[in-house]
Image 1 (cartoon, helix red, strand yellow):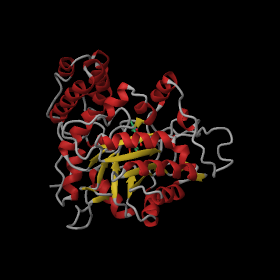
Image 2: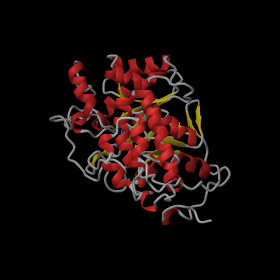
Image 3: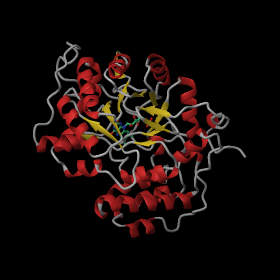
Length: 398
Ligand SMILES: Cc1cc2nc3c(=O)[nH]c(=O)nc-3n(C[C@H](O)[C@H](O)[C@H](O)COP(=O)(O)O)c2cc1C
């Protein structure tokens, strides 16, 4: 039987026995070497638990801000909370002050987390304008202080660092920043093969991933453009990275993790569900969102997911038109009524981006930010609850 895949992935051989090793992050061994990318507004427990049931790997939380956590912000605390049976428990944190990051890491470790990832790739203007997120790797000594503070507070819990290639094509920071992270005790570096200026546009640069994999002695996690499971094998084979981070490809497609697990275990991946199967998954996802966030917030969040789940199917425009009326699980059920559930999964949806369009940006940095790359002063974080709230709303991730 021909594999259901785009032409470039139809003939990619499944993993040979022993071809790939588990991803080793400190004492944590992850098989297959697959990581669900931290995605703000996406990788909460509802979605993580769905993905995990399909496959295996490391399923990272959406980013939580160090300040939000330390201020006891209820939503931040909810997102960071331990959930039944979730092991390994993995959390991404965002911060730009060594003391904050050290404190949050200590608190999370005491709360039983198994892995912490730090976000140094966020390209949002409100963040970089203050010298946070993807601006930090341009200040290697500051980055060193931040990683040192986290590693120092983490005990045996592995700390990994996620970054982009750099600010823009003129200022690539990843080589030096990744070396610094390694020297300061990070257990792995995740590299998204785009600059902050590129946002999510164009193709991710897998050569930069190869470059880093050759340079570092700790594992490099390759990130960017894993749309189909065989992309992961192609990325690992062509770059020599130790694992992959899967972002937009799994939006509305949690079964991608079943396909990944099969391929890494040397089997042909199962075909994707037809529309009836997709609807069943979407309804289960909605139930889990409602359980976690309550009906109002859960169903509001579900609106974007419905667009992602039904992408490329014939009835998707009609479904999208009814989204503004979605208030309850019953509404969701009615929304799907009358669709042809036997419709097969559309090939056009395999490599279609479901979030974050193709625009680029000029990265905003603080006045004179690049004058002294040796400066290790942390940027000024939000000082009070109101500033923090505005800040958290703006943080759209990395
Ligand atoms: C909706 C959305 C939210 C994101 N939020 C975060 C985040 O909180 N932290 C982070 O490090 N990266 C975040 N990212 C970036 C992804 O983790 C990943 O690096 C990026 O999407 C590239 O991988 P992909 O090509 O597989 O999508 C986000 C991406 C998307 C699409």
